[in-house]
Image (cartoon, rainbow, N blue to C red; front, side, top):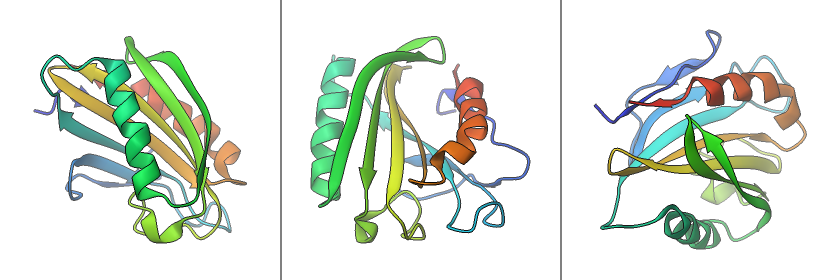
Length: 152
């Protein structure tokens, strides 16, 4: 219905009815790592008239600055996901009051990797996040989630 498919690891819990523009969210088991857990989610937005991917990313980076008082963007690079041209924006934040991804449950500096892409007259945002020190421990799971993401 929203034009995508995604698969979360079997050990993750999945919320198919989160709020706002979030279409689905997967959360790892908190028992895996002492500092917290990982979150992956897909947000879907109607695409404004003839908006290009670069404009979507530009607006999103402006939104990051509005949402997070304390953040640092590490990279903004063009890539491909779901056989579609995309941009990946990686950043850190420790602004826990503003953590819309996980309802404020991550209590350490958080690494967030956001993939922006356009398809089906919509913009999609696939986001993975975990505590900064734990992020690499979830790399296989994040890669599996990213590889499972498809537009249809």
